[in-house]
Length: 361
Ligand SMILES: Nc1ncnc2c1ncn2[C@@H]1O[C@H](COP(=O)(O)OP(=O)(O)O)[C@@H](O)[C@H]1O
Ligand SMILES: [Mg+2]
Image 1: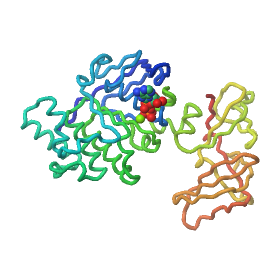
Image 2 (image 1 turned 30 degrees about the vertical axis):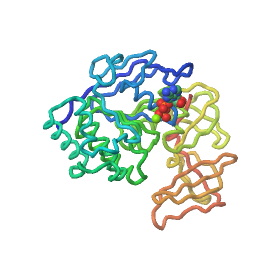
Image 3 (image 1 turned 90 degrees about the vertical axis):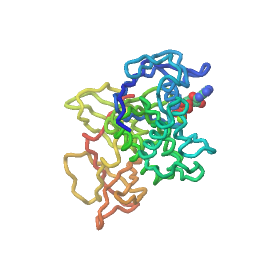
Image 4 (image 1 turned 180 degrees about the vertical axis):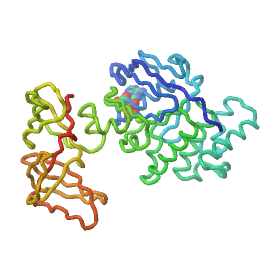
């Protein structure tokens, strides 16, 4: 199978409600040709609804969907040439793997010889060349997922939609399959929209991610942008682990002063922010822990606390440090022989202001 024609997917001001309940609210997103794009959000946030809308199984009350420059908002699903893979694979149990993969091609009434070639090519692509005569029940979960993928790419769709395609697999296979999925997508060059509720999964393989909550896109960005510059509290909490501290933005001097109960006053590097109630976000690995007798450097703000909990996670140790009435999570890299802090011990917590994000929403 050759690399496919790469198309752009544009969703403009799409809104959808079931009865009086809005499920998608003014969604606009533009997905580049050949992009691996993730829709990430908690359960019920509207991910599947948006995907089904792109496939044509749902109708929006307003908005436009444009694929490859063509307005397909009113085109029925069978004329859209979009491939969709579902969480439960939806394979026909009574058909062989060959029969399943051939399904869409038979529907399109292609000549038998062409179908045979396309089925073989699709199975080859997913590494199941010799499995054509088996039935789905004789395959592992990962192999069934590959058959579902082969069936979808066999029709050479313009766009590939994947709705939580890995969530029925066990943890190890899921991690393996996501790399495989990305490799396949890169080989085909097909514009792909991947739905998941698993932030690690979305961050690890996507070119860009749109985070949905309550039917609203909260942020669109590269995985690193979402992680380093969360647009609001929801994103900060949902993408990775983070410390959130409430406080007040004070009058600007050389920088923005932020006063919180736990950390006192920190001067943040940004030059302006509205005064008043706000929140700061700090990643656990951006905090430094020292024993209470150690020397501190002046580049960071230091506060004293007590180690409340310690979790050994291999590459790093995750500490919960109580500072006043606030718990801070601090991840410290672990090396063999490196001294570790003991619960109950007093420690100094170092905060680098450059790593602190001010959240305004
Ligand atoms: N056919 C439907 N009729 C009524 N409500 C629906 C229907 N499908 C989905 N919903 C509701 O729309 C919201 C979003 O659902 P969905 O898109 O499946 O979320 P996600 O895939 O992010 O878990 C949920 O509150 C769900 O209950
Ligand atoms: Mg869903």
